[in-house]
Every structure is written in structure tokens, then in C-alpha cells.
Amino acid sequence: MTAAGFAPFVPAPVLGLLSPEEWQAVGLSVLVALTAVGASLPFGIALGWLMARRDFPGKSLLETAIHLPLVLPPVVTGYLLLVIFGRKGWLGGFLERWLDLRIVFTWKAAALASAVMAFPLMVRAIRLAFSAVDRRLELAARTLGAGPVDTFFSVSLPLARHGVLAGALLAFGRSMGEFGATIMVAGNIPGETRTIPLEIYGTLESPGGMERAASLVVVAILVSVGALAAGELLERRGRARLTAKG
Amino acid sequence: MCRLGFRCEHRYPDGFRLDAGFELDERVTALVGPSGCGKSTVLAIIAGVLRPEKGAVRLGERVLLDTGRGIDVPPERRGIAIVFQDHLLFPHLSVEGNLRFGLKRGAPRAIEFHRVVDVLELHGLLHRSPQTLSGGERQRVALGRALLRGPELLLMDEPLAALDARLKDQVLHYLAQSFAEWRIPTLFVSHDHADTRRISSRVLVMEAGGIARIDDA
Image 1 (cartoon, rainbow over the protein chains, first blue to last red):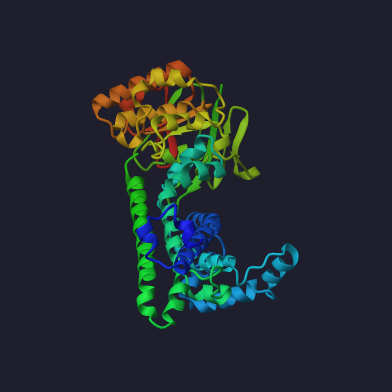
Image 2 (cartoon, each protein chain N blue to C red; image 1 turned 90 degrees about the vertical axis):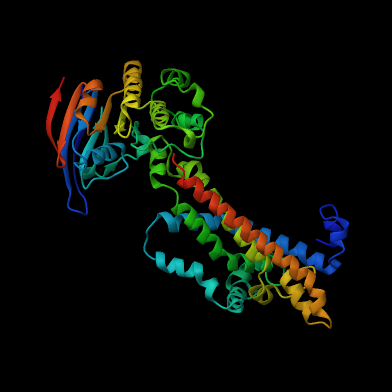
């Protein structure tokens, strides 16, 4: 999205605070973060529920795998994604050959990297939300004629919804700030993969960059703080609702 | 006519052992005994929310559980509704949403929504949230929700516990009305013999995980 694309939503004085390139980076970051969250949310919900409600062989191994992006250096995660989704990677090669779908060095790769990096935060919040749902309410639903899938959608998910939303917001905030894995797998292509952090990085490398990057840094801080605060608020509301008598 | 046949053995990790067997007819039956004697475990096994180590449960002609033959009908297909001791109303639904929960999912026996609302006097509560109800009101909503499931058997876990004398009389009145109106075979658990006498025709006395005696009215 270019600066002109923001014109209907942003007042003119604010529009002037960032350069057209910076607005482009903001628009791209929003697109990348929304795609990352939207694509990973169903998996996050499924895994969060699985980790909260089921015991199975290999659970600790799966938990380690989910949390790995939190502790691995982001460039290592980016490298691994490149190995898997690169043009000669085992999945990337398949996608390009059979579906004519190229991932690396496109905005889709930025979304993929963001989704992978934000996934542990999302799953953690969702898992906590499902753990806080009283299992006996699920059993009550079963005795009232709801099967396991029906119970999930009519009782478990609505009761965990604040936590699920909090997880999605945290992931959105994390995706907006993703840098290391993104630059490995998506590069730094203006208008295509140059998100806010990459734009800041690029600006800093040019003369007088410290001053020029300041407004974008403020945007990044505002977005992160907003996502964190909204996530925390939702988690609190969810906890308050679940501990209320009923 | 026998409505329910129950014969189960179950051992808890703490060593407590349930070993009980009985049959129920169409009447209202009370299962009484001191706390921790296994009454609620019996209800959980009948409702299908707890699988015993060994045993069989039959409702009419249907086998609901037979561990020997690997039969374990899931709770949603047993046609048995349960009123839990702490009601377990869904906090994200209104009173009406709670009442209609079982109704929407194909009740085995048709029970009219408005009739339940009339008999249990729930008109003024329909749009309220369960969190705003008093103990007696929650008990009535939980009973209404279970009735609207149209069950072949109704289970109630301590329906009179934690109610003061005035509320107890009120709930007993609603229970008596419901039993008279819908004649659903009912098994309810209580630790208070005096209360059970007022609404049940038959009393199963439980002690230390087994049925000690049966008192017929």
C-alpha cells in the first residue's frame, strides 16, 4: 500500500509525518502481519487446544518444536525456512514446480517468516486460555447432546475467545516487528518485502538516517505497545469471565 | 419395569473402591449416603463422563456401557441429562441460551420450551446472564436445561445442597411439579435422608462404595 492508499484512513497532517517509502513499509507490514496471523491462527487454535487438553506420546517434543523459534537466532530460523521453501528446497521446489507458487523473496516469505516467529507466542496464549476453561462445562455440554466437535465450537472456543484474540494480537505485534528471519527468507525489496523494521534498517544505513528513522521507530513502538496492551486487556477480561460464578 | 441396570467396579488412585449394583424403575429414586461414599461417581458413570474399570450400564433395552464387550456409548448419545451440584451453567450464554442448548441438539423426547419456563417460573430470567442469578435461580435454570434435553433418565447431584431452608422448600416445590408434569425417571443424590423422603418413592442407601440397603416407600 502506498501513501495515497492511506489517505482515506489517515488525517493529512499525520500523512505528512512519513515519507511515501515509509508509508509503503507500514502498509506492507500490516499486510504481512495480517496474513501471518490469519494463516497461522487455525493451527494455533488447534495446537493450543491439543496442548491444553490432550496427553500423547511426543507431547514434550512437539512443545519444544513449537517454542524453538523463541530461542533460535532468527537468522537460523530464516536459514531453515530458506532450506525448506527455497527454489531448490524440498517444499519450495514442489510448490514452484506443481503450483507455480514462488515463496522466497516475495511478501509471502515475509508473512511465512513472521508467522513462524510469532507462532510460539500465539500458541502459548491460546493454550493458557483453553486450560482455564472448566472441563466440567465441556462435560455438561456432552450430556446435553453436543458431540466433541460441537462442544469445542459451542463451549470451549467461545469461553477461550479472549485468550485466542490476545494470542492473535500478540502474534500481530510480533509479526510487525519481525526482522532477522524475514531478511533471510524475503530479502529487502522496496514495495515487495521491505517492512517497517527493514525500512528502519535501510534508513539507518544512509547519511542522516538516525533522524529520518525516528518517525518510523515511533510508529513501530506505538503498534507494539498497542498490540501488547490490547492482548493483556483481553487476557484479563477472559480470566475475569472464567472465574465469575456461573 | 426396569429402566436402568447398573453394576460397576472402580478403584481410585487413593485406594477408594466403588463396587455397586442396583436397578431403577420409573419412579423418583434417591441415592443417599455420607460424603465420599461414591454417590457422585455412580452418577458420573451413568451419565458417561467417567469410565469405570469394570461394569455395565443398561437403560431400557439399550446397553450404554459394557466394559467386557468394549461398549461405551458417549454421553451425548445416552439420552441421560444431569443437573450438576454446582449447576455448570454456560457463562457465555444467556439463561435462554442455556435452556435451549439441549433442545437444539435433538432431544430424545419432545418437551415444550414454554411449558418448562412456565412450570419453573423462568420468564423473568430468560435474558439474564447466569452470573447474575441467585443460587435458587441457578438451580431452576439447571433443572430446566436438563428437562429440555427430554431425557429418558434424569440425574441430579445434590440438588438441595447449599440452599437455606426457604430456598430448599422452593426448589422441592419445583422438583415435585416437574416430576408430576413430565414423569421422567429420576435418580438424585443427597446426603440428607429427611429431604429425600419428601420427593422420592425409593431410597438406595450407599456406604463405603457399595449399596447397603434399599428402602421402598
